[in-house]
Structure formats: C-alpha cells, structure tokens
Length: 97
Image (cartoon, rainbow, N blue to C red):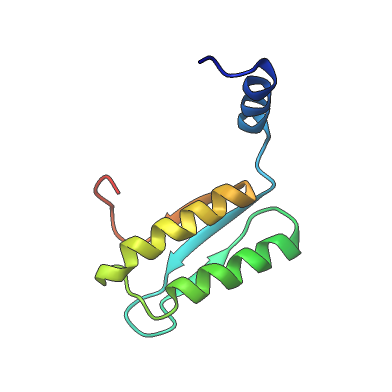
C-alpha cells in the first residue's frame, strides 16, 4: 500500500528543515568530568536542555567504557529529535562509529 501524498510531503518537509542549533561533545580526558558540550549556534535554552540531558548520560563514562556506545546512540537520537547538528571530539581518530 502506497503512502498518502500528505505523508510523503510531511516526510520531505521534515528532511529539508535547517538545524536549529549545533552541539559539539568534547572528551576532556580520563579525570571526571570527562565531557563538555559546546555550541556554535542555536537557542541557548534548547542547547542548555540538550547539554543537561547529554551530560546526564555521559558524565561518568569515558569513551572506552562499554556503556558509552549505548549512551552515545541515545545522545545522537536526542540531537536528531531536537534537530541539532552534532559533532563528537573524542581526542582520537574514530573507526567507523
């Protein structure tokens, strides 16, 4: 069954919207706090709310911790829901993450 024209138009419109902000998650090193969330643009309230949620997921996790991968994916999905561009600076080159 083919999707209705309204559904297709809504999906295309959602894909075209420009990001409302930017966030860069930076690994600070082995001593807690391990992370900092920086931003280049966007509504400060939106960025701060995202920062709070991201830090709650990452604050005690270094990148080599097994839980980090799951929580990283949750942070990525959160950024997608908020329509934020997201960068990760882990301090080392990443293999296809």
